[in-house]
Structure formats: structure tokens, C-alpha cells
Length: 475
Image (tube, rainbow, N blue to C red; front, side):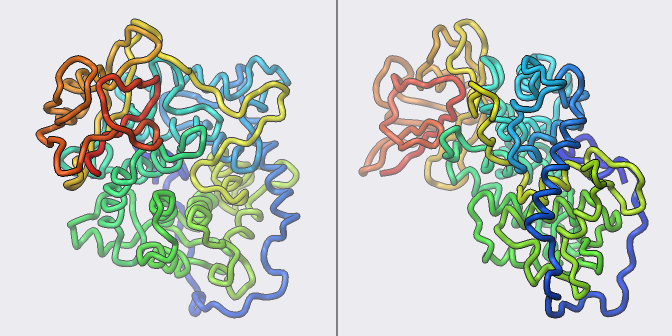
């Protein structure tokens, strides 16, 4: 069944495949036959040939993006997981058209993603730019993908991003904010913000232990419905990326749901039948949670594992993956999902060190351009519950700005209500009151930039392009 444009991945563009029937007794898990699982050599070969196939998808102009909707840009997450830097991927060896530079230019363009963007456009951009070695908060002077995402924070339903009915937007919002760290490897947003979405994801877990693409929280009928393999992998990855341990009851329930869907080929029996994309999402979820996709739990009595199934779906020597076992040509989407999973990746990956001489691991814009409007992500936590979150747009007069300027601009932030009052309202002094909460009793307002150690919040605090500004009241 085709997925809507609001889904950041698209496991298939075809109609629902016939679901593979489970044979009687097929869910029995017995001792693992010796040598049954895919070997390190087989995995290494799969990665090498898979990378070669994804390189062949690059257009002559160096691009992977084919339009405003879903496209082959997901190749960046798979390439990074397999150890290949996007800057090293070039058409015909033309380094001026390397995939990273071309993708960065596309993301920075005012015309991207479209005239009517949805939240998953930005989530897709964050996860893939990070994997490509592009700082998602500093793509260009006017493009901060982190701020673009938090603009979709649902004030009336804290923890959700975009319309809550499209639950996948919240899952991938959590994946993006927890997975796309700073260049130094620090989570750039406070844990309190991630925890709000963790709560939302937990509330949507179905009775069978999995998740679906649509919202189920508060709806007993929806919660009782069967779950989707794909979304279960993504949801469990989002929780683990945000710090939930794999021993947590939610992750254990998801693991057991997936175990119950394993069939003799090593595939998970999804609503679309046994296919590479669903298997890839599930394995990426297991990878993100540190759960072995070739452990005894995920080895069928036949000796096959989900990794075995994925490698069996790969054309040799071409390296592309087919969607269904009966297909005779590779699928770009299946090849991305398959390679990322086999390579041990979740839904993004830290960019590898480039082999191209002189190419840095990261690229970013370091400073504001005076007179060019820019966005910053702002999180305000009074310590009384869920933080307020918004995207602040301001036009700097120099290469840096100040916390005072951010607070002033927050009066017209998206969504509204992030900052309703601030004292002082001018000058460069210490912030003594914010949103009605005043310094006192040993507690004060403190500011952290990009997850760094918090310091006393003053209007004079220097803020740089792309900084995620977090204000917290406490001791």
C-alpha cells in the first residue's frame, strides 16, 4: 500500500503484497544450527557491493535528491553506516560534484523542500545531512534544520511534532533530535525535550508490543489493532536513541513482537509480506537498541536470521537489493534499507572520515550573515513539567547575536507562547525572570548552547549561528 508523503521513508511504492502465511508451528525457536547465521565475510561483501550499487544511483550532477518528496537521499544514511563518506561519492570522479556538496546546496536553497512542507521533510533532511557530514543546524546562513523541525512542536499535545494523527512524524522527530548530535558528539537538545516525545511514543505502543504509522494513544480500539513491522523498528530505535535502555519494558515488548513475526526465511512477516524494506527497518531498530539481529532470539529453527534474509535479497555481483524475493530487478529504497541494516546502522549514522585528500569530516556555516534572516531553536524549561519549544527567526546585524536578541525575537516565534515575558527587557544584564518565573531561593535561569554546560543566563550571552538555545530554571 503506498505510503503518504508525510512518511519520511517509503518501504514500497507498490500496492500491498500478499502476506506470507505462517505455517503451523512456525513460531517455534529451537537451538541455532552451527554456522547458520551470516558470517562477517558475507556481511563485509554485502556492504562493499551494496555501496557500489548506491554509488551507481548518483545522478550526473552529483545529486541523489530527485524532488521535494521521497528520494534516494536516504542513501546517505546507508553509505555512512557502511563506512563511506558522502564527500567521497562523485560522478565519474568529479570531486566538484561530490554528493555532500550537492546535497548541502539543495538543502540550503530557499525552494527546498517545497511550497507546502511537512515536518517529515525536515526530519529526513536532519537524519541524512548528519550522516553526510553536514551540520543540520548550520547548513547555510538561512537554513537550520533543527529549528525548522521544532517549529512543528505541538503545544497542545507536548511531545508530538506535526499533526499527531501522523504519528510517524513524532517518531522521526525524536530520531532526528536524539540521533543528529553536534559535531563534537553531544546531544544538542535537553533531555527534558526528548523525554516529552519518549512519553508520546510510549503512549502509542499497541497491545501486541509494536507500533503503527498512525496515532493510537488514548484509543483502545486502535491500541488493540495489529502493529506494523516497519514502524515498530523505527519507534524502538527512537526510544533507544533518546536514552531508553533495551531492558525497558517497552523495548522488551517490541522485541517480543518482532520475534513473533519471524518466519523460516529469516524475514519478518509484515503486512506487506516478507520484504527487504520491512526487514531493514526492523533490523535497524534492533541495531539502534543494541539487540543482536543474529542472536538466538532472532534465529529461526531453520537456522535463518533477518540478516540472512537481507543478504539473500541482494543481487550478486550487482549489490542492489530486491524488494520481494520474486523480483528480478533491484529497488533503490530496498537497497538503502537493506544495506543500512546489514551494515549495523540505525536510522542515521555518524559520518565516516573521508578518504578524499583535504576533505573534512564535517562542513557547516560558522557565522550569521548580517542582514540575512536566520532561525534558531529555543527550549525553555521552567522545571515544572514539559518545556516550551519554538523556532525563533531573527535578522542579525553581525556574525553573532545575543540571548537578549533571541528573547526579543521569541515574541513572534513558531509556535507561539515560547516566551511570554522576560526581565530585563533590554540591556545586557542577567535574566531574572522568564515567563513569570523569577530567580529566587537558590534557583536561577541558566542557558546552555548546543548541550554545553549551563551558565548564568544574561542578555549579553553570545549566541552563534545554529546554536540550540536551552534555558532552564534551577539551582
